Amino acid sequence: MAAAVLATFIKHAARSYLSICEAEPSMLPVARWWVVQHVDQGVRELWAWGRRYRSADGAVRELRLIRLANMLERQRSEAEVAVAAYTAAYGRPAPWPDEWEKKFFVRAREEVSRVVVADIDLTEGLRKVLLDGTIADAAALYEKHGRRAAVQVLQGQTRRPGGDCLKCRLVLACDEVARTPGLLGLRSDRRAKLRQVSITDLRYYASCPAQHYLQTLRLPKVNEYATPARIGQAVHRYLETLHAKASGPCQRADMPGDIRWADPRWELDADAAEAGMRMLAYHPSVCPLEESISDLRIEETFVFHDTAAQTLVIAKPDLVYRDDGAWVWRETKTTRRRQRGGEDVVTEFPQVALATVILGRGLLGGPVDGSRVELEILRPAGADLIMVDPSDPQELDKAYAVLRQMAQPWREDNTFAAAPGENCRTCPVSRWCPSAAGTEPLPSSQETARGADREQPA
Image 1 (cartoon, rainbow, N blue to C red):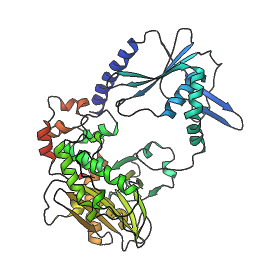
Image 2: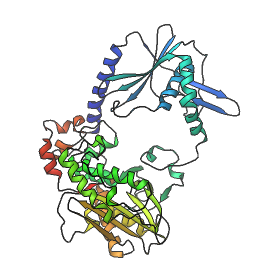
Image 3: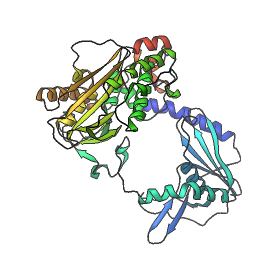
Image 4: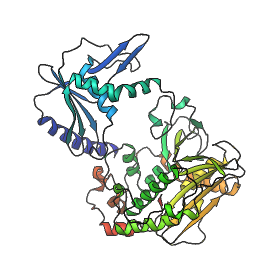
C-alpha cells in the first residue's frame, strides 16, 4: 500500500515539476552542490537544499527550493532566502561527500553575475521567484538577514524536543528526552526499529492505519479539519494567546464579543464562530491562572523514549503548571454535545490517559502526591472541569490499559493497510490513496453534523 501511495504522489509531483521546467528551457541542471567553505581553526560550510540550474555560459544560477505544498500559505523566511541566494552566488561546485560528516571537496570558483532563487510547489505546480538579482544583491541580503541566522546555528547549544526528534542523530543521547521504559505499557522489544508517536497519531491509526502512515510522510493534505475541529483549533489559539500574556486569570471582558473573533485561517462560518464564542464565554470560570501557581508552561512539547517499546512518545499539553509544588496537566476540549453523566475521562480521552501515566510516574519531577490531570470541557452552554488523581493506582492501571490498547496494534503493524469506508470522505490524504478511489467528499453540511458530537482539541 505504501509503495502505491508514494507512486501516486511521485507521479503527480514529477509531472508538476516537469511542467515548470518546460517553462524555463534555457536553464541546465547542475549535479554538484554550491558550497561556501571557510577554513580557519576549523571548517565552516554553508549550502542550501534544492535543485540547481545554470545558464549555458554559467553566468546565471538558479536555485529551486522544493516543497510538497502550501507555498502560498507558508512563506519562506527572510533568512532562508538570504542563505539560498548567497550560496547560489558564491558557492563553489562540490560533489556530496562519501561520508556525510566529511567536508566538501570544493572545486574552482565559477564566474557568476546573476542569481535566481525560486520556490516550487510540487502539488500545485507553481513557481514563485523569491530573488532575481546580482551577486552583490545576494551578498547584501545575506548580510541583512542570513549571517546572524547562520551564526545562531553555529553557536546553538539549546536542545528543543519536538516533532522531528526521530530524525535527529543525537536523540538517543539527548538530555531533553527522558528514558521511560514501559510508558505505553507494551512488552519489551529492543530489536524493534525506533518509531515516534503521539496520541493524535494513534487516533488516526485507529480510524485507518493507512491514513496515519500517509500523515507521517507529510504528504499534502486537503480539508484537514472538519468544522468541529476548526472550532476547537480557533478556541485553542485564542486561549493560547491570552494565557501567554500571563496577566492573571482570564476575565469575562477578555472573551470575544463579536463573531469575527477567530483567526481567519480556520474559516469559521457565522454559526461556528458563534458556537466558539459561546464556549469561550465559560472559560473564565475554570481558568487556572491564579496567583498561587508557578512554572507555567504553555503548549510545551515533551518527548519520552519508551525504551521497552522503542518508541519516542510526543506529548503537548495545553498547559502545565505547579500548584503548591506539584505538577498540574491541563487539557482543554470543545464540543457542542450536551453534558452526559458518568463519563470516564481516562477511558474516553487518551490524552488524559497519557497525562495520568506521565504524572503518575513523576516524569516531570516533583512529588506525585498532589499532582493532578485537569480536563476542561467547553460547551456553548457551560464548562466542566474534571480532575484525575495520577497517584490513584486504579486510575493509573486504567490509563495504562488505554495506552496499551491503542499502541499495541500500531507498534506491531508493518504494513499499515487502508481501511476504506466512510472515513475516506473526510480523510485529508485520500487524494493519494488508491484504496479511496470512488469515494466523494462529504458535503459541508453533513460534515458538520457528522462531527458535531465529537470533542476536539482546543
